Image: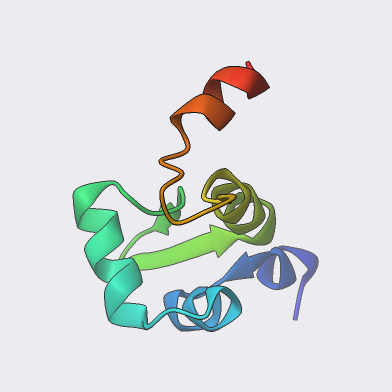
Length: 75
């Protein structure tokens, strides 16, 4: 396996890393809700750094925290 292949995760691998189902990531790609991804021909791949950034952006302090104030504070 070359270095690039280790940097990119398939949808199944990315979903497992995030604790989601692959179908959820499929849906997020359609709606734009999910992490950024790369398309190589018909293959979809995710960089681990992009998954980490997306997960970090969804961090909340409580169930009523919509993330808006946190987003303003980070700017």
